[in-house]
Amino acid sequence: MCEFVLRGFEWVPSIDHVGLSLPRRQTANAAGYDLLASSDVSIAPYNIVLVPTGVRVRLLPDECLLVYARSSLALKYRLLLANGVGVIDADYYDNLANNGHIFVPLFNASDQLVQLLRGERIAQGIFTKFLQADAEHASGSEPGIRSGGFGSTD
Image (cartoon, rainbow, N blue to C red; front, side, top):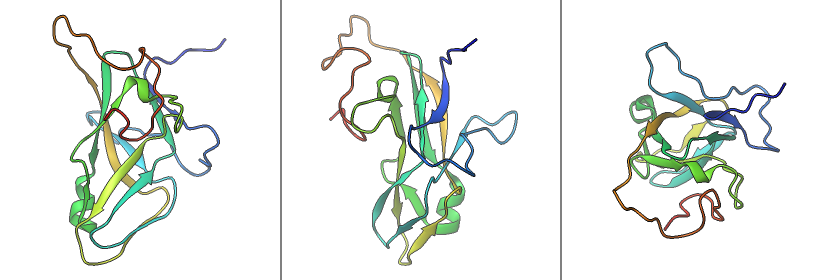
C-alpha cells in the first residue's frame, strides 16, 4: 500500500543523495528542519552562491516553508542568507524549471574564501500556515502550475 504524504521533504529526482539525509529536526522541541548542502561549494568574498540542497518539499495549499540560515554560519564563516528569509510556496514543488529543488542563497560577508562541504548543515526550514486577505484573487497561473524556478514569482 502506498501512502501519500501531504507535507514533507523528498529527494529531487536524479540528485545523488548517497550519504545525505533528508531534512530533520535535531531535537523534539526544535522548530526547524536542517537543510544540508548536497555538494561542495566555494563562496568567494562578497559573493552570493545558490547552494543546492538536493531536496524539495511537499506542502498544503495554505502553507509555505520559511528558510533561515543557521546562526552558526554567521559566527563560523560570516555567511548570511542573501534574501534574509526564503519563502518556498506550495506550488514550487515539481515546478517545470527545476523540479522544486530548494537552493539556499548564501552571501559571504568576509574577505576570505569560504568552502562548504557536502552534508554540512546550512539552513533550517520551518513549516508555516498563512492566511489570505478576504476576497483575495491571486493573479498569474492556475493553482499548482508553476513554470519558473528560484525567484520565479517576480
